[in-house]
Amino acid sequence: MTMRRMVAAGLAAAGMTVVAPALAQTTAPQNPNSPPAIPTPPPADRPLIPPHVQPRISVEGGAGVLGYISGTAAIGPAWNARVSGALNERFTVEGNYTGSVNRRSDQTGSLVYTAVDADLRYNILRADQFVVQPYLVGGLGYVGYFGPGGDGAALTTPVAVGAERLITQQIKAGARFSVRPAFFDNLAHPGSTVEQAAATGGSVWNLLANVGGAF
Image 1 (cartoon, rainbow, N blue to C red):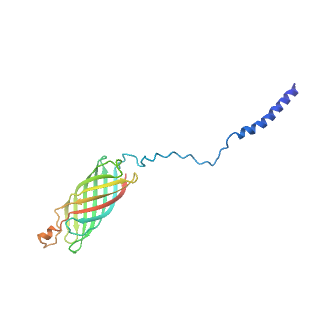
Image 2 (cartoon, helix red, strand yellow):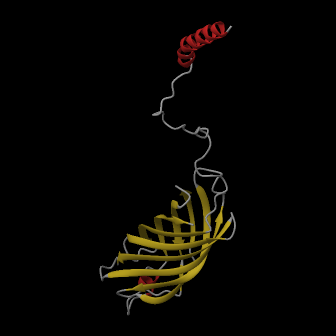
Image 3 (cartoon, helix red, strand yellow):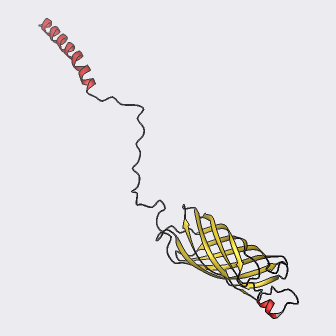
């Protein structure tokens, strides 16, 4: 009886040595160098910038051209700095500095234009409604003209139309066209006639492109 058990145990052990390699070959080998799983990207029609993005604070700088409406001076280079604070998706308050250098038409020298104003901006569309955000601006401020026949203190009421776009959530770019009427300005040389004084007004127009940070 003992001999039969020993023979049976031997046959069972021999069978396991044959079956075990076959079972091992049925399991697919694992590649330790497989790359990590890549998450599925968003649909192509989904914007990278989420909707209803409205920066609270913006700081921008710009450059462009400025010309005198009455022909007092030639068109010259202009520059601009702006700080904006959004009240809501439609209204924004702004503080603007605008400068320019223009050669006087009478060839007596150049006028340095310096203006600082506070403005209220109205967004015609929200930032997510179109490829650019159009807007209107109106304000009130100080302007000085420094140079031959200049005037160190006058009043300006700028009005503007423009458009901008968020390139990323922190960078924005845009452009605006402004008309900057001047009041209480006198850019005529001493001894000028009434006709000459009338042709030397301080009202200007300017076109500026801006880029800056949005926070």
